Image (cartoon, rainbow, N blue to C red; front, side):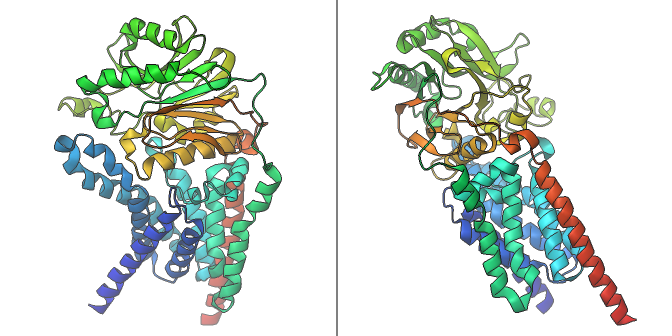
Length: 510
């Protein structure tokens, strides 16, 4: 009984440490507390536990982390609480426990491969960084609430220009492992060394970032971001559709305090017409925008009757000159895995159209937006995937993010999504302009600084000068290759430490 009780206490402690580690995520952003929780977890769970028990504790650690970091996942289920509210707790448990399996595998693998606490700690750094990289791509990927995201909004975020979010994860785990690597007798020294390592990218940030924000692009381009603030439970209600439509037109036509806008950016699915029948709506949008171009979220049906979540570009005169279809859809939101099976039962996903799931577009590409140049459109969820921006054969002038974060509630989800957009700016040295239905709409420069924003839950418009882009970053050129190289070196060192420990133990037994 004592053994069973000790195991349950160990799992409880692991869950608690994971929950504390999640407080490093936006919007709480207690980065150093999260680093300390990771350091304590590495110290406690690299004891000789056996790989099974280590995996269980790694799973509990991950479950605590994801349960706190991703608690906003319940929000979409309460948009229509009578139909979906009962599913909310099951969704959170499934999401937290499912993502934690990656961490369980990392902890178990570190125990299986490592010999001695230092060897196990170093293997854990390698395995857990690798697990975070894997969950960013497996089953279409979900690179949200990564360990390295605790540094969003801090000087350490600039390290992403060299190795992306994976470099931030590796930095975090390496710094957290140093107290264990240096041993019990030098624990304080190890903690100081870990803190110094975590602070080191601050020097790179000081070198990379000027004190003042980057100057505007040349030639100067003014972009208007509109935020109609349509709560999701009201957005498509028949008596409210017209209210939000007129509000969007009024925001588009509002007088400019400075130069007249060259482009007006509307949020995701903000046009209440299907593309095929939107000509009257486009005429009113063009009248409101004057001589400006418009990029707006809209839904459409293709020739096969499939629904698409799209972005349309309107030139002056109201003609639709380009249409981009969102290609990276949200599983269980915009479509259901094994959709043919679920559609027989009338299940299409929370954000899908009532008569069918969305279908993905052909892939990432650029849109020509006239005076605003060639931008890469990112609709909602697509902004979290760095690899798809890197895959473009041509570099965009800027990143256009149209989103509807009303699904995410008012607490953490919208702010975490904004943080992801900031990280994309740093990774690629590109400005990001985002229009969000309920917020946060923002202009972000190529260093990830928010230059101006419309607060969450408020209707309004914002005229901003398109910031200047930086030269392509090392991450834009190399992706995660530097991180993979570092992990290879660390794995070799970990293997050497473990082998030496095993040989020493063998000699002692002999």
